Length: 88
Length: 401
Image 1 (spheres, each protein chain N blue to C red):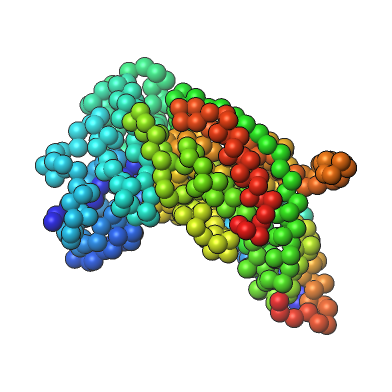
Image 2 (cartoon, rainbow over the protein chains, first blue to last red; image 1 turned 45 degrees about the horizontal axis):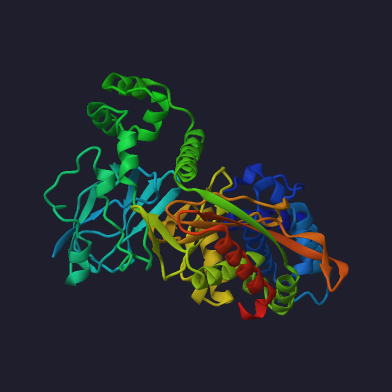
């Protein structure tokens, strides 16, 4: 999957789990917690959406990699590139 | 029998709401707890749930109307004595008189509310204090022009408001809607907290708790689960607070009409910060009796509804005790303010690694500091200390939660 496709999908997921976020206002490099007061439930909703959409396993220790949209894109790209990347 | 469904008070200082949508048409059946209509408040959209089983006879208010608390919205034909118990005596005949309507709001009967919980009704003396500053004609004109009374009061700045003040307000340019919504939310929180600080003699206690056992249990529990089935730390805290509230008297219920009304049901208000600013604390119903997985599912759904700006009247008013947690924001202690008419609130600081003495050795542990604000009209510090120790003991044995 092309980096731009992953980026677009991630932005859609973000604004689906948090409809109160204006898509145009998202800075992909910034920490979501700092940018949007993400709490632990928001973070879990985002991780669950990413895991389901891209069919990748996400361990709790991987959560910090989902801190920003850009770090999440790198994490998703790396997971999809792994041959055994399957469903959770 | 025929009864009227009135706009309930959805918080101690709510004056009015805008009816945005009817969810049931005349002739349709409605069940107890089913949403009848949606209203817009300073805290977002809220579905109003029916108190009764019955049939909608007539819609009395069209969508888009601003209505005061206590205003009849619809007439219903209800079956059985549940309806009779709900009807306000003389409600059908009496027009809603300015100044008295807040006090006349239907009491959300503790035995038969939409979600099994009592709800705070507006305090009558508050209504009087507010109403004294606005002349009846000005009040009527504000209502006709759809000017929220919170706005009128702000403009009044303590003076007496007359009808020409209202005309001036109506003619004044309106601020951008988002700014207005935020200001309204801020005013709502300000009014509730000012009342809390004015009326409730708070006492505060803090207790540092080793969160290690809870965290270790959670890690093991979550490891084999897909992300959407995992639990978060806040759910363990909620359950521990709920169990302590169920076991120890004096922390769960309402202080109303000069006395404490304990509640047997434990509905934990979960303070959730809104991104636009402000916060809401909708209730997790019967939190003491639900397993962690169920509680997590309901908490998750609650946050989803808060983010979408769409809550239900039952959960909005049902909380019998509140938990506010700063989570990962990392300060050590949060000193909370009781949300009236409740009598206790627990604040949880961030979970931080701290030196901790265990078996005569200093070790690094994840530590959370819990703060309890209690109501001195109901309990003392000694009872409060017992409450916090009970929460700590429960967190030390997460497998039993």
